[in-house]
Length: 132
Image 1 (spheres, helix red, strand yellow):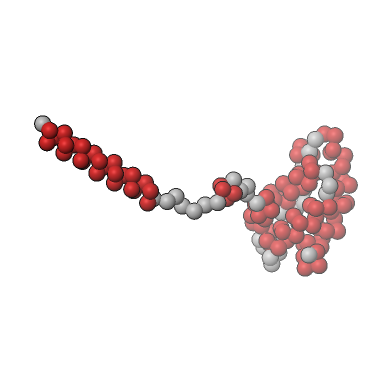
Image 2 (tube, one colour):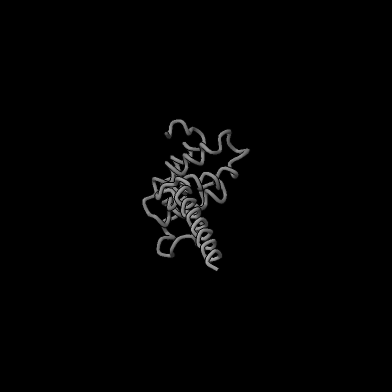
């Protein structure tokens, strides 16, 4: 009986000892804490959604979409109008703002917003090199 107990104790020590060594040797993959919580790039997502609408219209659809994001939309100070404009461009490929996309109190600002973005939009679409 003593032999059985001793053998069981030795086997248990070997088993738990080897698993402890295995735990020490296993290292998790090297990832930074910041990369776990990195939010998607909104500009990149916009270009990804916009570019398919520009194919066939422009030689470099990604450049036009990037330009529209960086220059045309940047002229719109109001966050709701800017978000609606970016949504319209990414969904249709042209500057569009649906009145349902902005609060009722700001719907009267849609027309003046298009006036404000007219020049940068035309530059992005026909001469994106000068916009940058």
